[in-house]
Image 1 (cartoon, rainbow, N blue to C red):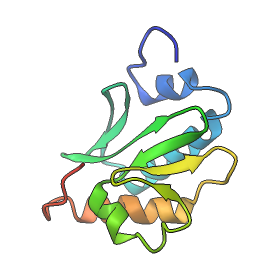
Image 2 (image 1 turned 180 degrees about the horizontal axis):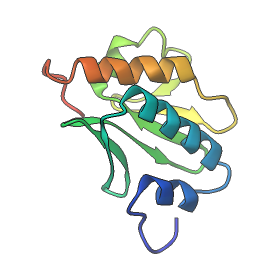
Image 3 (image 1 turned 45 degrees about the vertical axis):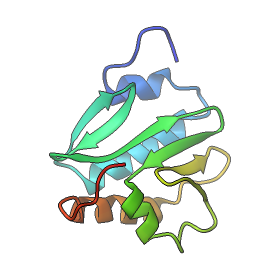
Length: 122
């Protein structure tokens, strides 16, 4: 990333490594379609969606995107996520594999529907 920190998601995507940009664009489009009323913002240097609480976030790394829909969302879909690398808070999406679009939609929809049920962002 350049010295000047991006202030919009579009700037964040343009500033990312070329290998990351197609995945970032696709992820951005998926999240925008699932949460069209969410506010897009950059917080702590990475894209976030807020509606009115944090819906999800993601960040570009050397070989993958980290997608953070919430720890509860990841736990809820743990069986479907078994073939992916995850942590308590993140799903790692490698650049050399297609994005699991249907799964990302499920995670984001789950997060939107369960934001008020004690499902903290982290």
